[in-house]
Image (cartoon, rainbow, N blue to C red; front, side, top):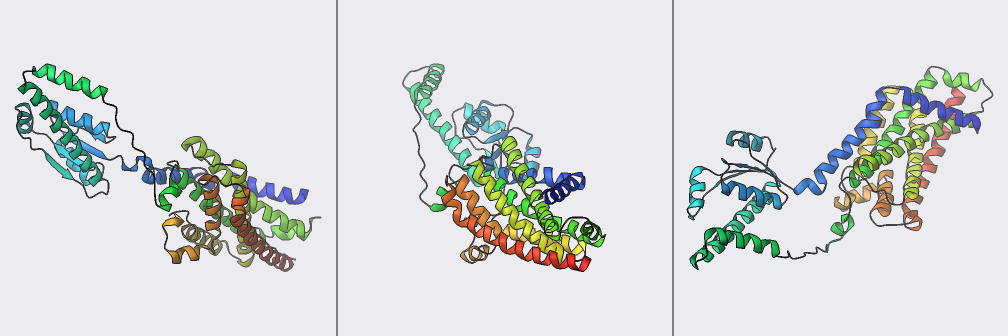
Length: 387
């Protein structure tokens, strides 16, 4: 066992010494987690508006009302606003010219210019703008009614402002009726991206280890190792353990870094690590099989990257399984990522325990055993050829 552990440690240290792995192992996964979280997280529907004017009271009130509705507001020039609109940096551009400001001051109907982008959030921002302007209209009507009854304009404005502070906003409780909304209710902004990238990169990194096995065979390292007291069984266990250590190390790093930088909640950490360990075992078996069936690093790397990305897409690492059509869900049953996805979903979203994750964990174990047996058989054959 000590010899097998030494081989595994050698694999890990050689992997970490390769500087080309720094970006793809330590930086790239976190960048993807951040990008997915920013696109599909809670802040995705906040919306952005550019309100252009010369600082008139009407502009200030519209900006204030939009910001109360959590719309991100900027105040560039009109040309800059249109350029940002064309580049997708704002959803709605609003121009308040001097005529609109004068009409507002005179209590007359106001016309403002609004240009909306084609982005999906633009309609939401436009409705927020309409609601903000309608609220200002109601406020002005209330003030006019008080002035008509003999209240001074300043006193009327102060009374309305004081009244607004005394209003207790209604409490709205949203209950999701459909299964999909209930499934993702309460998830953190980066949780889905983190679990998906965990499965993607663990499998991808482990499969890429197949090329090092081919290189060791091609350069005669395996033949020289077999001339030492190490047995073929120790070499098989050590090589497989080396692949597993790479995958587990990558997954543990993503879990720790995503928790530290993005506040991702992995639920029961012990169970999440158990799922990671079994999933990495599946990937180690697949890497051993590829590394012993092929004789050249180039095709092995191509198969590892291609199959790693395709299986991740089919298994829900890039798009939720719950949104896939039934046919794709059935195809996903043959993909280890989908069972890892279900196990992590049970832990992080549904508060499941060991009993709840037993079915997907059992399927992953069966996959791991089948791949490891095939990989060991293929590796034994390659060792026989090497001798």
